[in-house]
Structure formats: C-alpha cells, structure tokens
Amino acid sequence: MMKAKRPVLQAFALLCVAVGLVGCGEQGKASPLYSDFAGSWARTTGRLFVSDTGVVVFNNRAYVTCKGARLGECDTWVGHRVYGGHLVYGLLARRQGKTAYGNVEGSTQPTLPGQPIELNAPGDGSIVAVIGNRSLSFCAPLDHSAQCQ
Image (tube, rainbow, N blue to C red):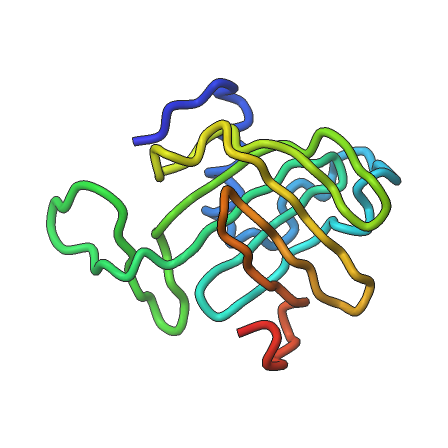
C-alpha cells in the first residue's frame, strides 16, 4: 500500500501505469526545463515516464506472480505485457546541465519515499535514472541495444 504526501500526484502516477505510460500527461503545458527528459522510456524489466512538467513514474517487474488474493507487490502477464510490480513516482525540482534532480514522493516500496531521483540525458537517445541508490538505463521504446537491457 502506498502512502502519499500528494494524493493528486499518486492518482496521476496510477493512471499513467494503468494506461501503460504511453501518452500520459501530454496535455500538460510544456516546460523547456524538463523537455530533454520528457517521454516514455523502456528497458527489459520496466518503464519510466517523465512528463514535461517534471513528474516521474517508474514501473518495474516484481518477479512475483499474482495468484488469488495475494497481498503485496506482484506482476501479471497478459499477452506479452507485464502489469503490476513495483511503482515509484516523484517530482523533479531542479536541473543542472544534462541532469535533473528530484525526490520520490510515493512508492510501493516503503523505503523509497523521500529518496533522491537523478535523471541523466546524455543526448544519445537514452536516459539513466538513479532512484534511491539504484542506477537504471532506459532507451526509447523501440531501441533494443545492449545498453537498454
């Protein structure tokens, strides 16, 4: 169960995951501050969505199968897509060069709220996200290069 400091942000994050992170938040007013980071980013085990207004949503595999009334984090396969798993969402607060910084606002993982988020956009079609102490590489959804696995 997620505890949220900002219920509206939590609802937005859950909506993003429900629609598959594609096109989520596109109606927001564009902010040149975070436009280099904005988009839907992919890796084998999860997705990262960054809105142009600085909302960050990360959904990742839990590697626990949902069965019956199981409590806690789990995922379900439907076709070739994974639903559920870990959910982390936060807000970017500042930018310095090709790096943006913010904090985790809520998560299904109880140790993550309040932890830092750092996004690095080197300009090569990839993005590196550091959430808490975990560093993950993401690429545009159709990029299947080794750096994105």
